[in-house]
Amino acid sequence: MLDAIAVVAPALYLVPIAGPKVEPLALVPREDRPEGLTLGRHESCDLKMPPTAESVSRFHLRFRFDADTRRWRVADLGSRWGSFLNGVKLVSQVELPLGEGDLLRINPWTFAVGTSPRRRGMMTTDDTGQTMVRTLAGGAGRDAVQDDMLALLLESAAAIHDAVDEAQLAERLIDTAVRGSGLPNAAVLRPVDTSGRVEILASRLPGSDSGGGSSAFTFSRSLLNAAADGHVAEITTAAHGGDVSHSIVQMNITAAICVPLMLGPAPAAFLYLDARGTGAHRPALAAVSPMRANAAAFCGALGRLAGLALANLKRVDVERRQAMIEHDLHAAAAAQRWVLPPRHTQVGGFSITGESRPGRYVGGDFFDVIDLGDGRLAVALGDVSGKGVEASVLMTATQGFLHAALQEHAEPAKAVAAANRFVTPRRPESRFVTLWVAVLDPTAGRISYVDAGHGYAALIGDDTFTQLGLGGGPPLGVIDDYPYTAVTLALPPVGRLLIVSDGVVEQPAPTAGTGDRNEFRMTGVQNCVTQANEADDITSLFAALISHAGSTQLADDATAVCVKW
Image (cartoon, rainbow, N blue to C red; front, side, top):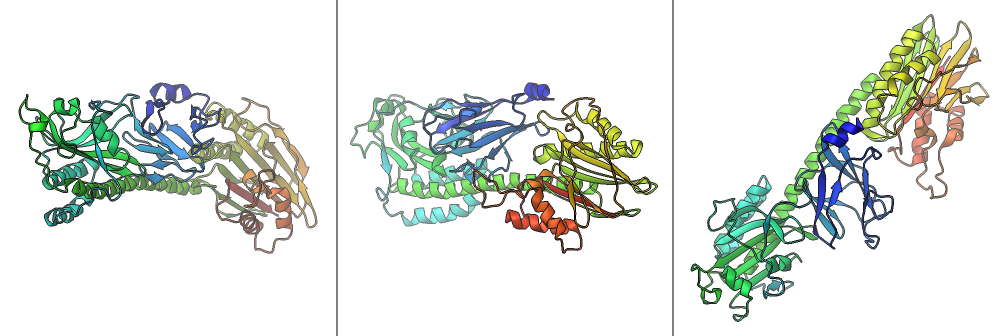
């Protein structure tokens, strides 16, 4: 399966568009990293960031390729300073799909997500250090916007915020900017890397239709660089007294404005406007600029409106992705509950209560109760290593096969051996299943069980709590065709059998320090069930577990089954 993923998985790249100089980062699936690729400052990370980048955590992000949807997903690993997808802060440990054109912010970098390390785009004219650019920061240049400009702003605000996508937003922005500034050439540009290459989202340029670009039209890189700091940048021959660079003269520019559309601390796009001379040999200095007074202030206000609208579009998109994921996970959790037996079951003289609570939406734990006839009862509890959807799928498959095997063999050793032969060739890399299975026979007065690497079961009498020792073999999926053996004990005339998963035993307290997790442990289980005042032991056990955790959101999948006779 992993070989297939390595062949068909599309490569994805994180191309820096803002921040210190780093090379594009390639996301390529690795057979030895089924859980995904990590990004951070730690030496073991697959995508290593500079050790001097203190705002990047040692383990900051995880990228995982989902073979089912053929998409890469990203999750924040609880980083100190956070990660932002399209301006929206990622929730720790929650995966979101990545798409072409997404902006991923990891302070101090902003990366554009794409399928190529060198994204296509127009190269800007490199006039850096030559052209005198005026930036309108703070109160500088903020003359009062004229009444007709203010009316145009108010008129366009609703249309800009009603745009359904980035293309429509760009078109409406250009229309308003041209009308208000007096500058005839306009484009909305998106940076694709840090070398000055840009992509045209929409434009109104000579020799192009609306929304298209002109290969003959060039853009001033110095103007874009000035605006990249978050300020409106302006070039006018009048403002600089004719002291402009040779490159500006060659481009025949008489006036130009560049406005950043900010998404957090980095520009997601630029509104670029200019006016140029009409004659091929007519120098820019001789041309008369059509730019209206206060055009820069007008465009700055317009850019802030558009930036808010763009941020809202990005936020809605991220929330839509999150809602789709949550919908699918809720559906998966509901389907998972269908395959579990009822919470209360009666088989002959046995009364069984079982409950499984996933650590997230879906879990890797399961339990099962099977009436074998003649008063015999089979009970099982399994725990798939890891969390999430992968663990839940393996859990469902394992439970279904084990259920059929117990019905066929009615012996725990044979059933577990058959389940192991089923699981081993099908399990994902690094996954296995711990399992505890027993058959209780009241007529023969015995209990036979197999403990496949599980370890958390106890026989309880009036004044006794006897933890059952390991016996039977390793977890499923570790050794193919392993000869599991059962342990047989006398079944007391009256008593209880309690089986729990490691999510119960290993649940930490919220005050746990780094040296001591203060886990619930089997002593917590024993104290709870021997002093239970509830109608059933499972209700009492989960109440104590939640109290210990200090939250209803448990750290891991937690499952418990109690059999009384």
